Length: 440
Image (cartoon, rainbow, N blue to C red; front, side, top):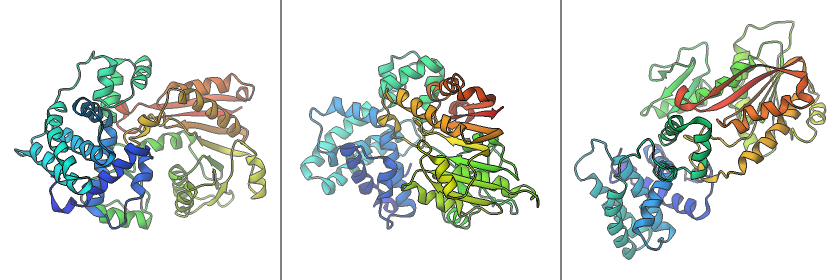
């Protein structure tokens, strides 16, 4: 942990406090908030700011509960943001071999920041509360058989979500999942250039072509990303593409494709395969019009060696007509549908998901997912393959959707060939599920 008083991160702290104040006030999406950071905040300062924001949101329940017992009336958002960031820094410091007096330094730094961000009177409040907060947050982890309410507060997850996971996974796996979600997400990247060996500073993982990005090499990483040799991507994304097993000479459809990481992986695999002069390979990527299309377009521009088309359209309305307008096939050898979901498998990366989810989402999402799966199935040619995938670990969005599909008339035209479930505490990367269905 870097000291909050270090000069190279001096701009990070107030920038993080302003974003956290906005998040507490409006509950804006964290990824959208971070996009508003000025470009002048770069390098270590930007990284530190992002770390603080993500850490506060990840541990928000625990810190906010402690503050609620120490402050009779919540202070205004700017002061509350200061206390939340100080609380996160205190959590980071707890149990670590840190320098003497770091707790006092954290509180003192928060007090000085409050003078600039709020007022001297509120700085006195931060000084008084901060010292008590350090004691409150130094409590040990809950016992294995602790009540749900205790787990919910310490691990900063909603009670109802923990109860749902306990019923689905049992106490040991639920505890492992909670602990997993509370750790910062490592950065992984996929090496795209088969003709060139990756540089030595990229740490190889157990997953082929995926590397762990360690700190200290970001300028080199940026150059590799710009050159198209590297793509930031979690190893879990390979699972549905492995099931799809795209081949040269096939027509392949990627639905709900934005921002395009899986499209790019499919294209890379096809481009690396031996070319067949007599067959034509095509990849069509489809998503709704919107801001994410720009990312999809950028990623598809980095493909090579195959024909690629981008289509903006709604799968649930009349996508076949849109495909005809673009003179594209309406039946494909292989179709991938990456359905929108609760994101419960990727909470390390999307730290605010748990605060946005509601119990009703696990009824709403499966209904939409089943509709998308039915629509995708109509685009699979005879003998073709269909992969349904989510980044959820919950049965309602995975096995239950597949079961409902096979109970329908449309599902009788398919057989289930294979499936894979990634439970992150077991696999060591993001969670999710993928199912391979084949048209008879």
